[in-house]
Amino acid sequence: MTDSSGEDVGRGGAEGSGAKARGEPPGATTTIVLMGVSGSGKSSVMRKLARGLEWPAAEGDAFHSPENVEKMRNGVPLTNGDRLPWLEALAAWIGERERAGENALVTCSALKREYRDRLRRGHPSVWFVHLVAGRSALAARVERRRGHYMPASLLTSQLDTLEPLAPDEPGITLSTEMSKARAIQVIVARMPRR
Image (cartoon, rainbow, N blue to C red):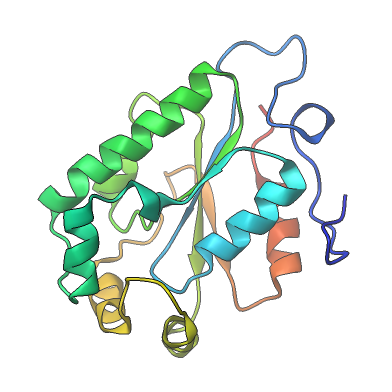
């Protein structure tokens, strides 16, 4: 399948929808969590995947409380306590998709293993795509963004906090310094088929 730009983005699920094929057990779904620091390409990759796979998608930033948004807007890094309700809200959304038998996509920085474990707890559908890029590429992307509350000044804090995806965690690490079309092809080829 190709998107409106003519790029091949593949298809997933039954007839390319978020629905599962007949005969698959309930709950046999895939939730791709696009993770990484600010500027890694989570939102843009998710938009392309959502168009190509025709899966429900959620922007993780939309789950932050107004207090969290204000802290980040002011250049204040979030604490574990700040992140906990946010992670719980994301995990609840994932659970809703699983109960509905839907494959899904969601963005979430998921910087630490403990955050990823919280998203996975009770949610077997979760599969991570850790999007990475060099510091200079990340900084340039964040500087170019308009209309986003996350200031470039927090990038260093995020990089310092980041715990890369470990070998025993479900998912892959993928550079977004390749073309988006190629990144999408890799994700579609490597994602679980449930």
